[in-house]
Amino acid sequence: MIIAFLTVYVQDRETVASKGFFVGYSRTVWTVIVVQAVGGLIVAVVVKYADNVLKTFASSFGIVISCIVSAIFFDFRPNLAFLCGAFFVVMSTVLYSKPDRKPRKRLKKGSTLPVTVKNTSR
Image (cartoon, rainbow, N blue to C red; front, side, top):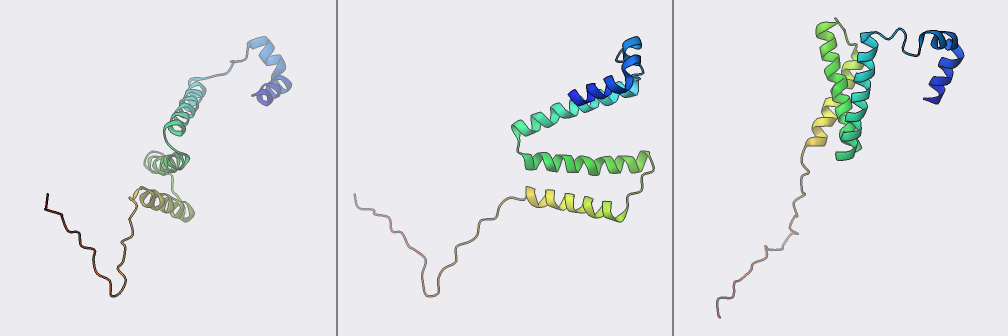
């Protein structure tokens, strides 16, 4: 933030001094600011209550979903590299969410299953 304020001071000192810091902020600019701030808070909550791997998968899924929405509403045409990346994101999410398989213990050749006998004499 310090670098950003120094840049504003160096480049736009006269404009900020005469018209104020927020001159030229439109609804679009305020919308972007609010979306970025809320996104930062959501990331903080996810990191606090989940792990970084889950955050990465959520971000990756967000990229894929925004691509789909962009393709529908803004005529976005993804290239082959993007489609391969999206495929790997989806596959990694599927593989990560699968439950762990416990390996079966194999019996050695010639061994028998253990037998337990209940003691019924009391």
